Length: 227
Length: 233
Image 1 (cartoon, rainbow over the protein chains, first blue to last red):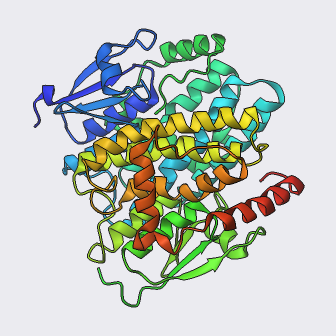
Image 2 (image 1 turned 90 degrees about the horizontal axis):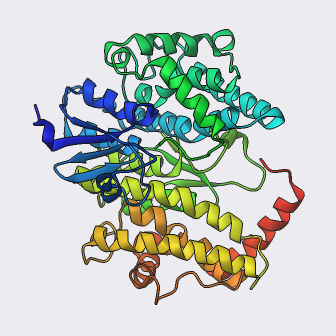
């Protein structure tokens, strides 16, 4: 086990990208020191470690900062070899990365629009999100998790949708209707949230809904971090 | 891993920086491949091989498609490990740095290029947009100093992942300088990157796949007229 001071994680309790990194650290059994950031009053450490984006999560390993949650996941997998989260085969790795970036770039974009916008733009975003969910649903055909029988990199990457999509829907008043239309995805959401490492590492739901509700009311497009 | 008997096809088009990335990676590994040149009308094969994005490049290796340019570059590096040079750094921290900056580049540069492309030459708008792009490159200049550690490329003494990510954008950057009458590769502001860009374009793995500026300018005119008459996809 690594001494806790060697691994530090700067985060924010409501941020899905931060949880993503915590899930990976816990799956690997890596001890770490967690530092909660007030994003309205960022610490000098955070700004020093991430001067470019000034966002969380930031993983600091032996004094070296790593930024961008998917980059952090790959770093974690390469540095601590037990319980690998990425597959070994290069073709399978390319597919894992493909779905991770699809969700991080495309699904996140449409979810943000569905969350922040109103009227026609909101409707269009929900439509686009459903097309994306269909693709994810098809990818899950015949599989328990994206990564197979156990959760892995892709599940951790898509994981925010299992919890925060519902939170966003409740906070912003829309429905993507995945339970009706996308049975594989809906099943995956439940199975993913039931995994011990995930279940024990989620923010309190009501508090998170409230947070995002006021976030939306602020009308701000500042990301809570979503890197 | 042996590269003999492996069938490699690349769906792409010569002007695309994303396609160029893959071609540079294949050249670094000294791999032969069949180029399937796309036109403005997307081929059935492209639509079938990349149903999610319907975009090039798509690498087809022994019949299996791999999509997204930098994911393909990484796939090439992980599959052909004993052929040619290593594309990603060997140290995991250096890899994280390379991936971070690649994401930064992809977040900023393609959009900047798209914004500049239709602008009026010498306009105030174009000057302002060019300044923003130069500011972005100034941030990347600092990264270059750190990553190269005094050597020729981000990857050290040979081109690597991050060189490919940024270098592939040079064809459009140079074309825009000509078309829109703006300055981007300004020696006084980004001296490291300007010298790096010359070395990159002259590299064996890059030379034959980096289109000439005049050819890009001609293509840009065709592209702009096609975009003006086609609904956005």
